[in-house]
Image 1 (cartoon, one colour):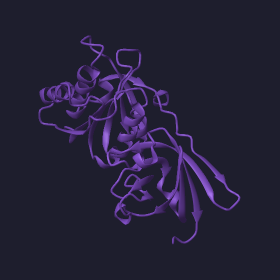
Image 2: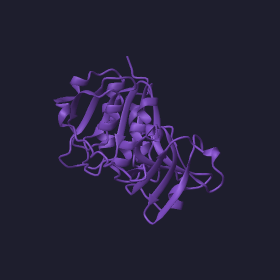
Image 3: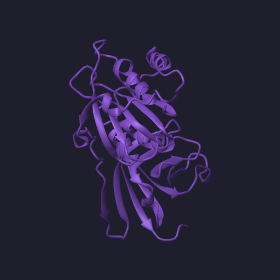
Image 4: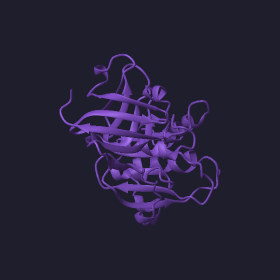
Length: 271
């Protein structure tokens, strides 16, 4: 029995042969398994950005094997791993043990078990080709997880730091909530590390970011905003995003991933 698909995500980009080589290895070892590229445009070495991408994507993928490579520690003592998850979606997550995979595993029901992979003596700089892709092919072709490596206590998997979110009550009855920017998409929408239900009952929001502050509209869709007008909404990933009508909220606010933004929310009927 084979897996439905192998999903790939990396910071390799397309300027070099890396992505093509991964496809070639998988085509050679598992020619009948479909390979789906999620993204190879993760910023170089950006483990947190890659982890966020995987968390957004995995609930929508269906059965298969996920290979993710953002690996500034390649060739060091960091572990190469496979995580088997408990829920629906990709059953196995393959990649470096540097925090890249743990959030995605949580979105898929949690890590049930894991193994460490033995690196072959081919290269110390291209584990995507030499370790992760061959492992994914084996899993896709039905190889049991236990035969691929030594058991690993899932409690020892490397996890990224949780974002620091603060909340304070103001004297005028408003609530100030500060959180870091987690993701800025190619349209300039600014996703915060805040769940979408933060907007429940909110009538108006003031945004404070670096040297900028503005009252923004609370909306449900981008099209509710006129050109260049800022708004805040619950996005497709059930997170809070600051957006602009046919423009870049990130450019207007001059913010980057990791910057802290404060939302000052008033509650009551929306005007």
